[in-house]
Image 1 (cartoon, rainbow over the protein chains, first blue to last red):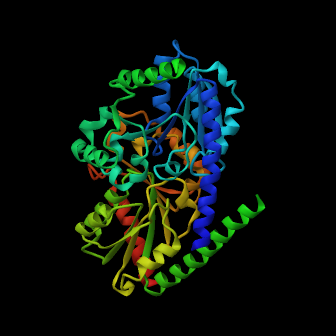
Image 2 (spheres, rainbow over the protein chains, first blue to last red; image 1 turned 30 degrees about the horizontal axis):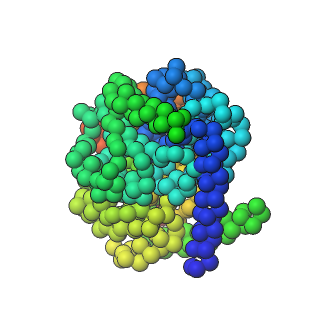
Length: 221
Length: 221
């Protein structure tokens, strides 16, 4: 038992070291970066597409997409206007700092203002692996159900912003927003939250403004 | 690198050994068992509730619910008529054979006809850990999107039945059923598939009949 714990700790401390190096590299380039996490199908790629649509005229944007297999997501990000790099994790259930470091090598970081990292679709494992990005963003989605903060607390606890996606589906599914928000509040009281719909576009502007403010802050800092 | 692979192999072979022991125990009790896997919020607990509603008058049913935290799912299964046991994985991203073995100890197996094991909400990690159940069932859900077989192939490859849940949401989301099915066919050509809606009840009967046939077959075998 002790041995197992010690192996886990070694993996995490090696990851934290690499995450710190990634952070330093991104800071040197004045590049604001987001680690976007969610369940499979919550809308990570759709949020990235919408963000690119509204931000690409103002900023140079890179997207790094982590997936178990395929390059579907990087292709979608590239079509939406990003310089895109696909990470295939080869079965691994999360993106880690080492994978991000390799992907960063593919990009001329000084040329970009904003980096969007799309993590592997998973509500558990990505919470344990920091990447070195400026902010961690979680996307919840209405059809997933209102009990997710209670059932996946680690993910909700550690993020800096929460997008609640697919609000256009609220009339068609059972989702008690008060119960959901109560769970979020309990775990992460000051979490900034953006209810949005990628289908109707509702709420996207507030999200994009938040991103834009941070990109500007990083440039002047 | 070699060392890492060897550790992974040891974990899996220890798990396979325990899964074989679970299988033997379940066979001795003539207890038909399902390992139900899906993304968070695809509808595992709802499918279990619907199955209990239609099967509980014919069979004695136990439910074992794996979750990172809370006993929300076991409570729902118990309210729907099952004898329910909650496994809290303590942060682990899947249910493994050792956890199932401990949960089986809480049940008098000879008293039951059907065991429903609800795995942790995750489309990656549960694929690597056999439990020793008779059949592995995957639940896909319409709002997750039609690209999931392509992006999470290991999960689709190894299952014995596929439920496509939330078909009542088809009019409200983009989902190309032909593209989805093409991906499934490629990975698992003979996979039996049940399109259902827990909200409207559509398709549930076909699923429940399939389960019922298997429960009876196990009793007479």
